Length: 510
Image 1: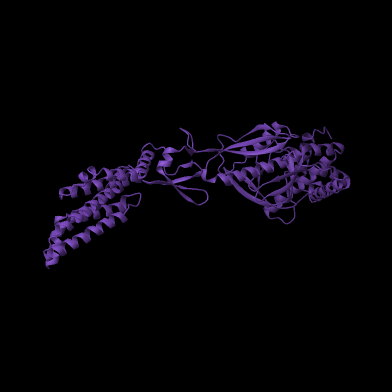
Image 2: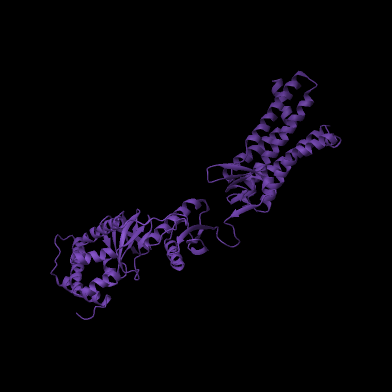
């Protein structure tokens, strides 16, 4: 009983109950109010040392030892420092959040450290220990402390300056020296930066204060965008204005993820090399963490756009060009022509054409590859009058209703689409999107114009095929087994298509 009574008296002398009350209130309230977790480990350490000191003082008091006063001093110091920590939890994690104020973590750490030192010095001074006089009268100790703490003081001052002037904030993507990444935390000694390599680099605050720091995506009054530049070289055989138009439109109209529509992407000619033009596609990145994947997607779009336009990336001027043997070149041409003929033979629309006419069209087919996610045709587009034949890959047909794209069907190897646009100039009835990398060929109006002008009666045959296909689709939608190809509606549709084909190709009166 004597020990418990002595412990009670020591707790009263050290104001332990005020400390416990403040600690409980702060911890309970912070669980419901704080947006961030308080630092409890240092607080728990000083509270534990305070309790241990109280136990020691109580034990010495029971035995009547003269050293009890020496133990009461550290008990009071530890209790005072713990009280400062509990007050900081209450202030920074309860009161300020309720007032919609957010203090940086480094401010909390520095304030706790300052008031803890002041509290400790005050308590020891009242106990008769003059630490300030001891430090002031010791020039050697002062010099040692000054030299040993200059980096620490520089880091603390740098961290406070960074927080107070908002030059760097948590969440910013920055570059300092050779380190580039996103700021995740600003502490009293260092700033933590997470890089794209799944690393966390700890940069001392005084290094940030002395170095040039680049903050990406920050411009007054503007969105958090970052301009990216993709360089590529194209042979001089292709006119620069054509290259610029093809590449710019391919990226601008693609509506790619993480690529801003405003400002719009642009393409410029940077330099003229020995045998090529050096170009740059410039676009604005909306997600600063997706820089490398988005650059890759943009480069892919550039490559496929140039391939569709029949343009090719330049090879080094020092490369040696070898002329193919005539027989080998002829074999390659024959192989390519055979592939195109096979595709044309699979299209029911061209079954009415003679073999010579299909051969003529096969010569004029243009290779048109698309990468995954690219839009091949847009619904409502009335300018592109051509038919596509898919050789490899999968594409999805979608129609727009009430602002939404609804799936209709899939197209695979051997499929074709766009026959109404090719023959009548009708705007695209659906949007076709490449679900995988798609290799296809494009038949444009001009080559077909030459064929139909030689044999105008093809207009009637083609109109009949289109009308039959439309009737078959209607019958399939209505669940009928056999289409009625002699129905008045089919005859009327055939006459209407016949007139539209002749008008589109300006064939005159039949």
